[in-house]
Image (cartoon, rainbow, N blue to C red):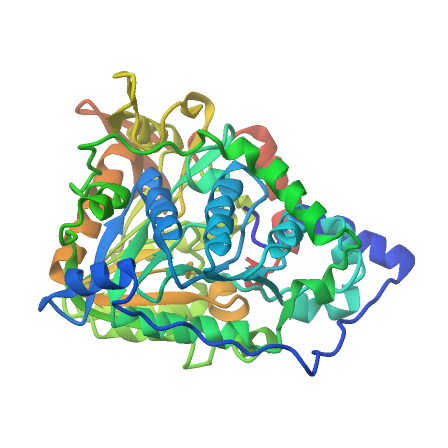
Length: 543
């Protein structure tokens, strides 16, 4: 997903210049409800299972969800078993079959009496506001929008047009992503709720990473959710999107809308296991045996909702997730492995990496190549850092979209009829879909791991709000390192400098044969033209 919807922004700004439109948000309602999270209880099934999963292993329990099919299975299983509360916080909750599947399970929970709170950033709700209105018509469901656009809400372009005079505010977005059920379990990481994050999109799909969590981390995450939910920047949907439809009609609309979710996410087969040997959570919960989990310390960190007011604009706010990650990197003793879809370090980032390298830390980066990046302008900004980083001795690998797609396709499971299918989900049109990385991961000293929503770019550090987890677990660090190494070995170009001069080369090794490219591989003329025309006019701080 384009992070600031650049095409719409350009059109919107043009329209605004023509009509000089401006609008403002209504003042916060004085009788707006203030809610707090429901704590975990062994009086719920999920609460009992979470308590059993902890045992004496450590303050928090967690397990990786590297495959999208297992990650969605976890969310659906938790929604279907929830008895007290479900809290969802997402940058993107799309009006597509993936959004329909999850929200239908959430609606069913609400009909059982489960309290549901849905908090969505307003960036992409032009296409989903009707879905959210219909969901909010059910009992026990509340929906709020973070940092909403005040007018022109039917189209992205008109939203930007009528916010021209308020650009500094609406350019800040809530990028957090988490799902919490019964105060007992949570899923957090890099995935938004949309087809392309769960291998249901025909044009392009993301490989990503989430964690399933239980234990001491959950109250910390609930506190983050409450801070955002009760923030003056979060508006009840009905204050922004009025509707004249009666609740019963809206509920009928919702049932019609989500009917396409039938069969979209079938149960994973008995005995299935992901890349790391974990069974689907739905199967594990049904078995009623202690869950297979890793244990350790989890530190939950989140940007303040007040970041939308520009408090981190200069990059010197020590409370941000980015600042905490930088502190963790500075504390590294031996090595740092970075995996991020968008990498724009800026001058401060380059200085940090230079300091780390001078003191002997080994550093490596896996990021998207230009051909696999859904944000070509971000890729162009990153490109300016490659030669300096290579001269520092930092290892750089870039995702080869063709081979990464093939890697996903070769990771297979067994469908119900016995046919071989992709473990990213059965019956998906992967043969024509681009493979991209969207995972935001760090591993430090083979012990500490970072998982979250934060990209390593200026937008995440200064403009968007983010959620992050730093986990002390050598076992998790080993699992994540293995996944990154596998993607690097089977689906990436290795970068190097060739002499004379500082010429970049991309090296692809396949079947023992080495292929060397002296120019960005697999990049079409349209992308090159776009970069030529637009990149001089887009500041790195917007990317």
